[in-house]
Image (cartoon, rainbow, N blue to C red; front, side, top):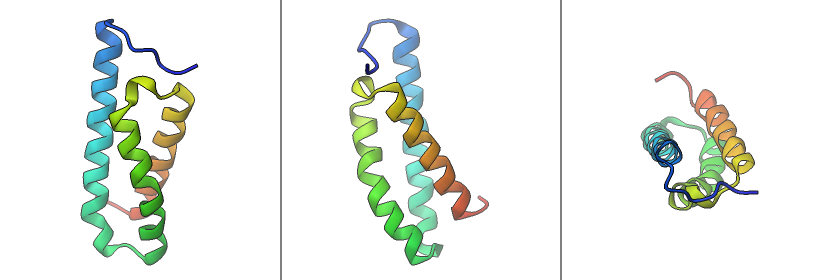
Length: 83
């Protein structure tokens, strides 16, 4: 029950927005990691490959998987601290 690839403009726009948001978050996390503790660095090493897969195959990822990844990234971002 994944997100189906479609020519529907709203879906394409949503996927592009998702990819943009995840890339921006990934880049922000990379910048903050030098200040993070070892436990956060290890967690990031687990999350980063999943982020890359989501960016590259967003059209084929289930909505549940996308929601889970967004939640985990949001929680990780909170633990990194203020901007």
